[in-house]
Length: 81
Image 1 (tube, helix red, strand yellow):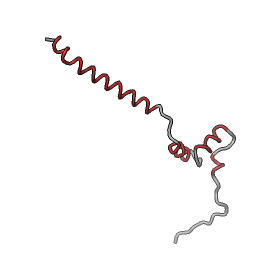
Image 2 (cartoon, one colour):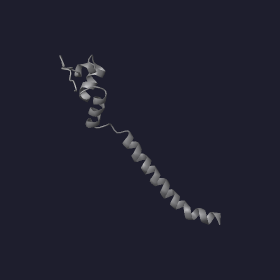
Image 3 (cartoon, rainbow, N blue to C red):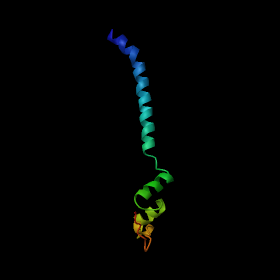
Image 4 (tube, rainbow, N blue to C red):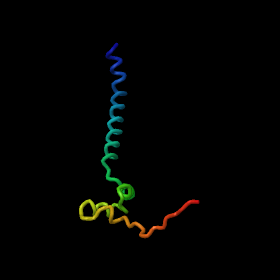
């Protein structure tokens, strides 16, 4: 009886195992992809840079986030009445 049950479900389980392996392979490939330029630019903005290139220049050179920050001089104070 057990052997008959095994023979019935073995092909089904093999198909499921194969499908799971394909799914895991696809997920792994997606996780290893390099982010696109738009994503890199957005991440750079969060770090205080204008774009990915300026972030890379600061990372590998002498510049920093202050290079991209130009405060307005003599800023007028606003009063709310």
